[in-house]
Image 1 (spheres, rainbow, N blue to C red):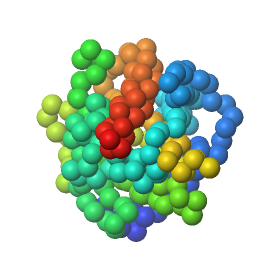
Image 2: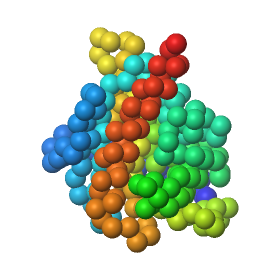
Image 3: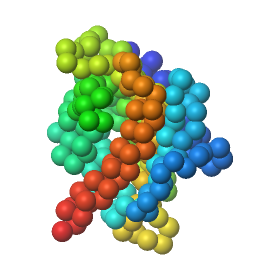
Image 4: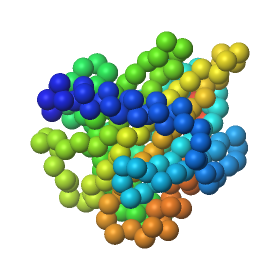
Length: 213
């Protein structure tokens, strides 16, 4: 992928992510519990929903980032039940890459294995926040693979934010905006995302506990 185009695209995605983060209106809560809230609103990117998760996780932003960051051979595939493979297709800079993520079947196998090819930008902010910012791209080195339905992530990612006055905690805000493709009933998709996002937080919390023990 052309580095100039990739840089431009990723900057636009990072800007959208900041807008999502700042916009506190128009979200409807669809799941709450264990200190985690998941809300949604209609996506302006595709005919589906934009989901927002928020919860405080035990650990500094750097420690939480270590568990969630998109790197080959990283910790994410070990604890996140919705990710079973991650590879870097093209490394553009040390903070920008094209990646392929594969996911297992889900929702009692109603959702078959998927894969996603994304442009991912890692951003660090002055207040100590670390973020990932991603969107789908096509890449010649990563055509559709047998056994996987190709899904599409519209601008998505996460913010690992310091909690003021509580140095050992991180406010983790996640945004998912995924077109799973295939012929899935809307009801299956709408029930899958809030449940899987709640599971993401509880599995991350367990992984962080092991990290601290």
